[in-house]
Structure formats: structure tokens, C-alpha cells
Length: 151
Length: 150
Image (cartoon, rainbow over all chains, first blue to last red; front, side):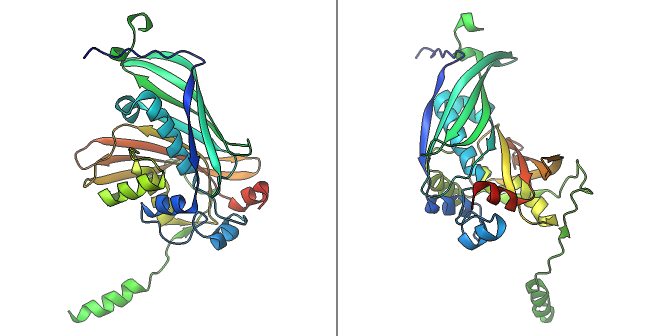
């Protein structure tokens, strides 16, 4: 099988990722690490006490995970799981019942010792169109995957 | 064996000897005791269900290891994650023990609010570098509740 040439250009869209947030999903995320006690993520009373909110919120780390998934799907696990980065700022809460859409756009490429770093701007919006997070991400695509003219 | 009951009683006392956070006094560069844990297949499976992604490769994210040792040492009014960066190096493998080194990477005051930046690196028992996580936590969590409108 011949090698698959990949091409990345400034302005390219990253395939969006949509997630439906549920309290069950939040509980599983927290529970996977043994965090089973009440917290602002899993318990309404704790959320009111700690944050002053009327309901629970999802950990920002869940949004971080989804941004990583979007990038991994776009660049491939063989690339992203070894060279990927995501840096996300959380602007608004994500709550159970929210539908959040992750999108990205390639902002540039730069040479690295072992390939080309593809930089991406990320934006996260909820079902109301409010931005819940923004950030940057990148992956280093090995030279072997790039066309000779891109090296 | 006679001593075991008194030891158990001591263990059950659960004395909270954590230090109340003094943000001004907190030193950037403070490195916490190493934290070790066994990553099980059950942890990975539960994480993947929670994030609705059967190929999710970094269940370490849910372990919040960058703030775990901070929270073991300090007590505060709680926090809100304002920003988080994650670097992928190698997906962790079920059944391997992970060792985490975490430290205070920075602290800053913005719009009258205190932030702490923690950073952590995870390595598995074979010496494989797993990931790096950097988190900015706002230390006045009720401020965001007001901003978010309850």
C-alpha cells in the first residue's frame, strides 16, 4: 500500500464534532477516576454551594476531551495521540441537556524537526449559539505524510 | 493484633491536616509529592462511556492529576477551571502504574480575581511519557456563578 499524502492549508475547516451533554455522562466521567463524592459536577446542592448556580455543570475537562477527539478524528490517532496539543479557555458553563458543537480552522503551518506543525483555532458553541470555549490546538504531521512540495 | 483496633480507630478519625490556602504566600515552583495510581481497563471503559467516544485515548484527563496533590495539601473555597491545556505523548495502557509529578507553574491576579496554574506530567511504569496537563483555576468560584446568572 502506498503512502497517503495529506494536505493542510490555512483556512481549512476541521470536521465539527457535536456532543449531547447529560448528567449520566458527567457522572461517568467523574466516576471513571474514582471521584464519586458530591461535587459541583454531580450534585445540585454542591453546585449551589460552590458556584452559586442552580444546577450542575460539566467539568471543563470534558470539553477538553471533546476538542481532543475532534482533532484526533481529523489528524488521525497515529499523529494526534503522539504530537497533539489542545489549549482551551472555558467561557461559559456546559450543563446537562446542552448540545455543544466543536469546530476548528487551520490557522497556519510551521516546520518542525520531525514534520510540520499544523495550528488550529477552536471554538465551542452551545445550542443557543453562545460560545462556551475558545482555544488553540496543533498536531505535528510527519514529513512522510506530506507532499514533497509541502516540505 | 491487639494494636490493630487502635490503629483502625486512628485511621477512621480522618483528621484533615490540610493547609488553608494563602494565595499571596503560595510559591510558584512548589512541587508536590509524586502521585501513583494503577490505570485499570474499567477506568478506561467508564471514561469512554462518559465522553461517548470508544476510542478516547487519554482517560488520564478525568483523573485531574494536576490538582490532585494540590487538593491533598491545601484547602480553599473551591475552584473553577478557567483554562486547560493538554499535550498528548503516548496513550496510557490498562494495567500499568502511572506516576505523576505536579507543581505550581504560575499564579496571577486578573480583574481582581486570583488564579493558580498547576502543571503535571504523567509517566508509566515502563518510563513512557504519557501526557502533560496545565490548568488555570480561578480560586473564587462563586464569582463565576454570579457571572453565569445562577
